[in-house]
Every structure is written in C-alpha cells, then in structure tokens.
Length: 447
Image (cartoon, rainbow, N blue to C red; front, side):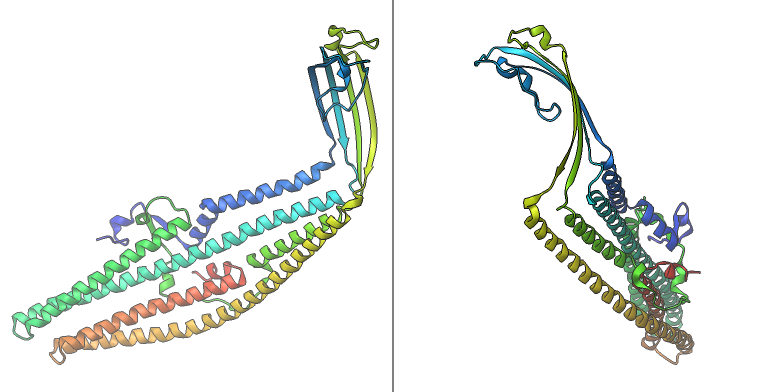
C-alpha cells in the first residue's frame, strides 16, 4: 500500500514547508522566469530611448559601374549625399567605374520634449511589465499555498481513516472471540468485515486524492521528481488554529492594484508622447566623403581614376522641420489616447471596489470559520467520549453492532469535520491575505 508516512518511504524525501514552496515557485517555475525576462527586456527600452541623444555616425565605401552620362551622381542612396556632374553632352551608355568613401553624422540634441516623452513611456512600460510579473507571482504563490492546504487536509484525513481502520479491526477481532464463545451472533463478524473493507477503500481513495494534490503542487512549484518524494512539514495546520490580525490594509500595495496603476501610467505616457508629436524637429548633420570617377572634367574616360579617391568633399548643416499638415492626425491620436486613459481610470476604480469587497468578505469568512472550528472541536470530543462508551456497552452486551458502528461512524465524521473546519480557517486566512495583497500575513501565523 502506498503510504507517505512510512519510515522507509520517508528516507530521501524532500521535506517542504509553506515558505519552501513559496520560494520554489519564485525561483524555479519556468513561466515566471519567462515573465521576469520579459520585464528585464522592457527595462532595456528605457536605456534605448535615452541613448537616442547620441549622434549617429555611419561610414561606408562604395564601388561600382555606371553609365558615362552621370557617373559621379550615381551612388547607393543613404550614405553619400547627392552629387552631380560632369554630365555628358549626349547619351553615352558605355560603363565606367566610380568609387566613394564617406561618413555621415546625424544628431538630434534638441527634441522639444519628444525624447523625454519616449523615455517616460518606456519607463512606464517597464513598470507595467514588472507589476505584471509580481501579480502573476502573487497568484501562483496563492495557488501553491491553497494546494498545500488541500494536501495537508487529505493527509489528516488519511490519519483519521487509519485510526478508523484500527478501530474496525479491533472490533472484528472481538467479534470473532465473542462469536466463538457464543456471546455474539456470527453476523457481527461479517458486518465488521464489510465495515473494514469500506474503511480501507476510503483510505485508498483519499491516498489517490493526496497523490493528485502533491502532483499539482510539484507542477506549480516546479519540484523535480515524483510526488512520492515530497513530504509536508507544516502538518500542524490541520490541528491548530492560527493567531492573526484581521484588520484591512491599504490596497495601494496590492499587486493587482499596482498592475492597473502601471497600466494607467502607460496610457498617460502614451498620451504625452502623442501630444508632443506636433512639435518641430531639429537635425544637425555633417558629411565627409571622397570620390573617384572614370570621367574626367574634360569628358575623357580614365578608368584608372575611377578606382582612386581623387576628390574630397565635406559639408555640415542644420534642418528644422515642422509637420504642418499632421495636426488632424495628431489630434485624433490624442483623443484615442485620452479615451485609453479614461478606460484605465475606470478599471482602477473597479479594481479598488473589487478589492474592498474582497477584504470585507474575507474578514467575515475568517471570523465565521473560527467559530465553526471551535464548535467542531467540541463535537469531535463529544463523539470520542460517546464512542468509548458505546464500545464498553458493546463489550458488555448492552448494544448491538448497528449502534456501535453508528457511533464509530459519527466519530470518524466528527474527526474529519474538525480537520476540515481547521483547514477552512487557514484557507480563510489565506483569502484574507490575498485580499490584503500580503502573503506574509498567512506565513507569519505558521508556528
């Protein structure tokens, strides 16, 4: 039988507390690692936006064949500024060589706020990516703890079912003795055998569920190996009540609130970036190049000079440009971004309302589950006393099997209800911690 608690099975196992699981989720889950790298990638956009203040310098060399008609003016566009001459008096299509070596400098030292808007938008997008990672991490850690609590509850159920098997087996052995002595009918033995089979079946079903929860826990926390190698250390969660404050906290630190706050900041930064599009642009340029042409100034062809850089040129200047006819387009973009800001503001309002109601509900559930757990403890103790009395009565011949097995069932139900009630208190505390956006409230209550 698969049993996680046997000494042989415990050897070489990975013992995990709630804090261990939280750490594993953060450090080992592949999905979270991907989101973290996405946030890191977004961080580089800030440096890229700031780096646009550096001048662009491009150097290159060209060589080629072109028609005699305008050899010096035919060059690959982009690097070499347009040049002309000497033209021919007529169309001469014979190819002659031409070369060029140049360097282009372009600098935008003054952008009238456009660069700053781009930097602010990149910073907002980085904050959004980081807050998204934090929110996903928060939710994944919540799922891990919830799964851990389910596993602890099932582990406690297994202990109750094992105790029930022990009680049933003891009753079976007694019935065999009583039946042999003629003190009890043989049907009691058959009934005890059926009850024992039922008890063992319930244990097997619970073990299967427990294994499934450990499998899910190993998936969420990216724990290597099989669930057989996992042992939970915070098992006292099923036997004691937490001691925790239930005051609400400021929700501005909640990961979900911060995510929508960052989302709104991106919308605002995008609006500012659009608002500055309709501003002038200043370009400072400089160009230096040397060229060679297979056509001399008098029109003669000298292919040797076409491969040598015989003419040197340089130039510099400034350019101020203004997008005169883009006013309508920019205005439409502004209205679009303004609508996005309003939408983000509305989303933040809804998130704030949701978190407030979530806090109120979690507080109420926590208090109610505390009361239920205390009543479950009273019920469990009473069922235990009743079963002990029924056992003595059965041994004395005062009651029959049906009365005894009913008392045994009531005890099992009371034990499982107590374990469930205790775990519900911890789950309610977990929900309260989630509503407050701080899992330390839960982990700090674990002794």
